[in-house]
Figure (spheres, rainbow over the protein chains, first blue to last red):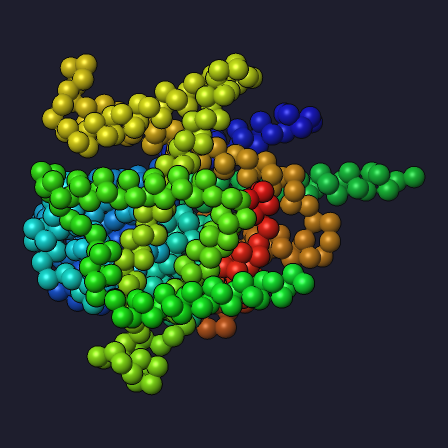
Length: 271
Length: 312
């Protein structure tokens, strides 16, 4: 079979596996991994008088993984009645997309914009901005996405510096979490949670093991685990079927490639 | 001797830094006031005067630097880089509070710490300029493609259309949210461009990656050696351990006890949390030591890069 045909056959197989399970959903049982459970426990133990910052440094390209993570985390925070601030560090679209999610989820728990949650929007400056947050949150953020000064937003009342923040959860496809570890956990011991795309997870394990991260969600699986923990299966769980079958197709493709390779090698060795 | 010359140069920089440090310590309060950001309303003339003043000052300074002879220009850049790096060394490597080192300070605090915020603001401004520079550079490259009708010129045209439309409606909807264009609110136009065009395009581009990864896995994941076999087995276990169908395969095994170690999700977590952890930690150590060496080279302007190889 030609290379051109093989490639297209693989694409068709993968698309069929994903679409088939999307059209005919399969109910699956999800077991929770320790990093996701640790994050859940940490959020569960947060005090209600301190701000939870959800840093949404992602954009549409990784929406499939990061949006369900954001939804699950926000849902848990709103369930518990934690004051929440959303902002973004790396991608301008992140806070906007996360704001849309929060605007959908918050009313389900009777939470209101301004009173229970706020969207600070996209903030430039990287590490310097994070260092600024530690010392002076209103001075660094100044206004929310609607251009309302933060000192006039009820949920921001009494929030002056990092000591008024209970935890920061970084949701991102990039390795931006060391910035928070360096400037916030390292200096002020602010708990840091991490929700990343599947490919970024292996790089974060050293931080998790050292206790610099309180917990972690690994890609769409992490979102599904968190949804299981909060008892609200949503997009993460819905994605587990297509992801399961896509993984099976990739494994089958790799095995098939090896069978063909071994057959070719045996043929070339024949006299 | 080159190294002797460099040593003398850095001794001069250090002397300048010490003098600057002394100056900062003596005049820290007025300096801090001078570098504090001015928060003004749109109607406040002092706010706009301050902006105009800083623009005139910095444009003048850059124009002056442009006219300086090249060796002097290089010295100034090297010196400024050294001083900027020295600030962070003194701020982060010296303790926050020390009775002996900072005996003259009221709470024996590091005298460089109060300047941290102002230096941070300055860094953000410089980062902002780099965005501006990137936009100019990108526009120049695409304008050349378009004017000379090089192959793929239509991509450059698409760039300009997208760039201008997004910038125009983005800024317009931000500064005049009630304005209308073509019978629709400008914020709606921005919404169409962003939510209905940019977001799906971005998502599509990343989704296509899955197909390329599957093809690459078919072609590249060949068990040619024992190591490749180990890697493939580990990859299968981790892939299966992340999804419910994989967990279902070993669901008949108990959740606790010695046999639970054979469950696919337990093996996947062990591979990620023990084997991968050790490897990643080793890689991180190596990378960070290299990062430190690289930072030192940049700080002391020893690095040969795009900038320093140019005739200055």
